[in-house]
Every structure is written in C-alpha cells, then in structure tokens.
Length: 156
Image (cartoon, rainbow, N blue to C red):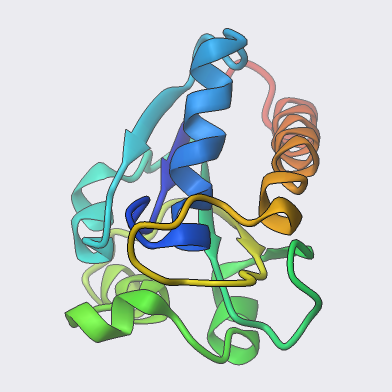
C-alpha cells in the first residue's frame, strides 16, 4: 500500500496531505505502507503507484463544499467532481495524471482519492482550523480503505 500526499505545505490548506503523512509517522500508523510526499508533481505518481496494491492519494480539492469537508473519490469521479486542482497551475493535475496512466497501461488496480475542501490557500500560512480538524477523519477513511482492500484482496 502507498499513501501519497499531493500539494504544497507552504500554501496553507494545500498542505493537508503532508499534515496527514506527518500524523501517520508521529502515531506510527499504517507501518506497512510506503508514505510518499509528491509535492506538486502529480505526474511523478505514475512511476510511484503500487500496481497491484492500494494507493491512497490525499489532496486539497476545491469541490464547492464547506472548508474541512472530506470526500472520497475514485479517479473517474475525481475527473467529474473536482472543480479546481492546484496542480493544474504546474502542468499536470490528478485527473490528467490518471488519464495518462490509463493511456500507457500503468493505472493501478485500486486508487482512492481523499479530497479535503480548503479554506485558504495562501503562502506562509499553516492549515486552517477547519482543515486541521479534518485530519482525523482522513485517517479514519484510510483505515476503512485498508480494511476493505484486505477483505477484497487477502494476502496483498
């Protein structure tokens, strides 16, 4: 299993993925998972996906919800639902990365995106209270994904 943070921790709530990874490390959660901070380079995920395992991607995503709202997406749903992706400012966003992975036959069997609605994405800001309060929910959702994956694919 891989748990991937996407975003820039120097831009306020865009750093929610990195904050989740920090919490996982601090609390020694998911000891068998590879933790990856992809920063703003979503395209690099293609080479880092776990082809036969679970890949959980955590990202700030403007979905038109209240700040701190967490939503689970498949790659297909993400293409339809996420209205804005900070990575699009840097070239490839998650939707484009998934489309590229599919087109070259590198899309893993299971990818789940956990999007967190940001309150503020501004330089030199920490996480807003709303997004910081969402971190435990993200961790619970990761745990649920792990349980589901283990039930569906014993031995992985």
